[in-house]
Image 1 (spheres, rainbow, N blue to C red):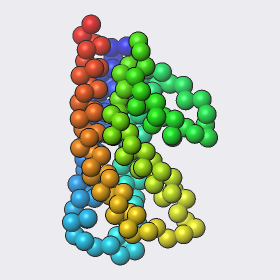
Image 2: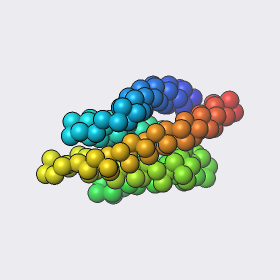
Image 3: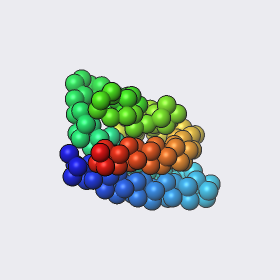
Image 4: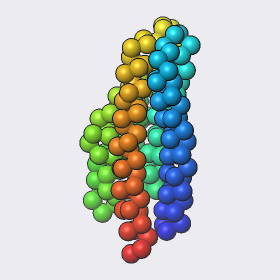
Length: 157
């Protein structure tokens, strides 16, 4: 279990670096004020990728600790919800309530983005989820550090 914990921590660090880069690109683009069709699609793509990178962390945590989301039709929602709960004797919650709430908004947007080939993305909605992404990232950094402290406590026992 010790090596799995260290591998999880390394994976989380790598994903957070990727996500930091995405957040920086989103922030730079939002500051530019440019919101034509191409900019809207680009920003939506970055938000989508941000959420997917985060979901990869959630999958790794689930595989190390419990790995049993049973309803494939609700997989993404259930995986996120599971990371907001303490599992006594197994692990503490990975996400705070506020982080969970904001990420759930991004999860829903990710679904819309993946199926947006039949309609245009709304630039105002994309700007809104960009702001959520910038806000949630700060909260997520705190959640990740707190969870890593929990992981270190496990390996030091």
